Image (cartoon, rainbow, N blue to C red; front, side, top):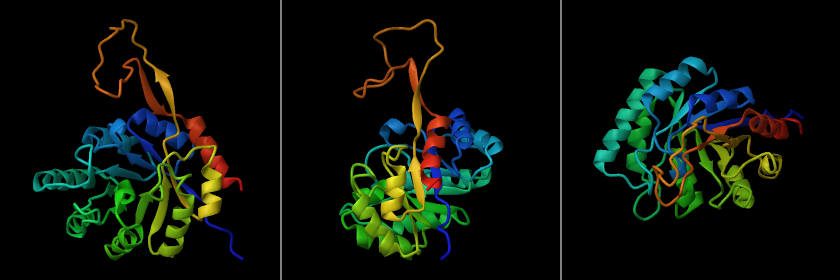
Length: 252
């Protein structure tokens, strides 16, 4: 009986500091994003260039021009195609995409255009999958498109809540596409998710709150809106939390 292959931990980061923390904690791959409060959008190419120069693990870049839904017009497609070209030029290892039709199916034509533009980079389909109408059919379409992996919580609020669906997706995938479990994965549930579902890749944030070094603070004025941010704190990846999660899924 051959031993199961190691579990790969992908860390979602939005800064160079977080990328360093993630790799120090043992993350085997980085997903680079910006504006995580909206679920992530495409980061700046400058950020990608700095991380590519300093981080040795594979770096996959989120290609998402805005928050909101995953139904894109031609202007937004043009933006995504240019972002993909920029990522290829700078040396990204992969891109993370996701498009849906108005009816909640995978937008095959749009996705194919993005995949073709990205090659030879690896391609992940992100959690737009979790908003698709029929997950089994959606997974088969992604397989047919040649996409390497799909990031999913099993169409649940969190990957832990989606464990039964994740297990079904792993079984359906049959090694044809990687199921990357993400959504609230942390040191308290990572080992169980891996053990019960059979996934061999997990997607984490592993963050902690860092207090700003600003001495002067203008109370009552923020740069955000309804989510009420605290401008004197920011969320960054914590190497100790990443290490704890890596330990949970590699020590069993």
